[in-house]
Length: 474
Figure 1: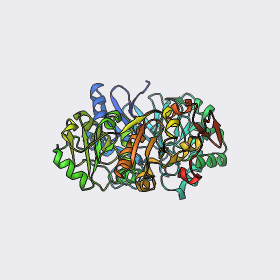
Figure 2: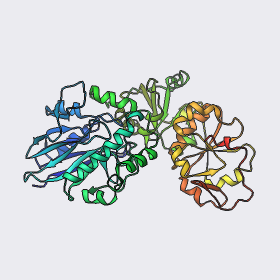
Figure 3: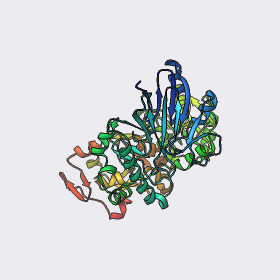
Figure 4: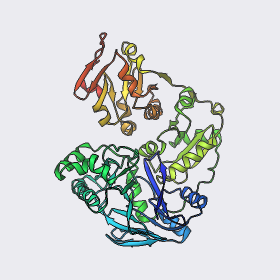
């Protein structure tokens, strides 16, 4: 019998959970914390839950595995090497555990973490057709080896290389690979390719299988980028064992209560899209629309010890934000406001522009261009002249921004740039949103674009950098 595998995607975090089943009994792999999605699939397909497995103690989200196992009274299978604070069914390398008519075989695949396990799915005919690789082998890449600290990164990268080669040595070419990370997750060591693959595909394309060990280690470590600050909270929560979540409606706050919260230093996050925020917003709020990578970037910037309030003109935005926040350990924001923001008196607007407007603006006294992308993105290509402060550093460095003139802000797709506006406005600067993807800049002939170490002079029209190299904040 072929075992069916269903995906449960969490695109805002770049992760994927799985339900494998024989039509009667199901195995859940690496569940996100909002387990109602799992329960809905089980109910819709008439499946009983047989077990939950965890490939590793995740660093990018809080697992729902413990609560799910207790709710259904089924084993929660975790590596025997993981020092967790809760009761679980441990599994060791090469151990086989039955689930319904099928079974799983644990495969110790260190690299993303020291204790990482992959799980080969064995059908009734004792054939392996699928393998759940978690943060080990991804589609065209591997999980990053530095989440436990840079001191361990080289050793873990070497282990990752060995684990990937072990997987292809013991599994057949037709085995389908089901990773947890690699769909936009910062847990990926490098960009992944495609949405699915088999062992034979990875043999042809995955650098970990094409490079020797030292070359893989060197290239992997050299290519690692920064990862979200909230990751430091996830591992400890998962090792301790997360509690059940509460997605009931948050308490609604009055306009006066919201204003007092802003004055007291609370984070008040506006969940509307950036167009709505720039057209009219409450001064002192931050723009993190639920239409983008909300949890990743809010979690990256939000001080977890602070009070958090959510506002929008739609109740559905608040509910969606709550769901995304529990996935990264922010369980119950202090309150919310739902309604027309015109009820507030202290409203502001932000001008929006396009990249094609930059050449003219550069001749306007006091106009500055601010790039809030990560350093690795900027090194690939950037506008000259422009300042550079990555979004995740902006709040601590905002006072370094010029106090004169407008600050035109851009990123890769405008989401991070819109998140930067509230910080800049709060520092009494004059932000302007460049509301276009960065690719639009590459089409503007009047811009200087540095690509790598080479400057592409498209059509200068006397446009030249104002000031010294220090002005770029590189």
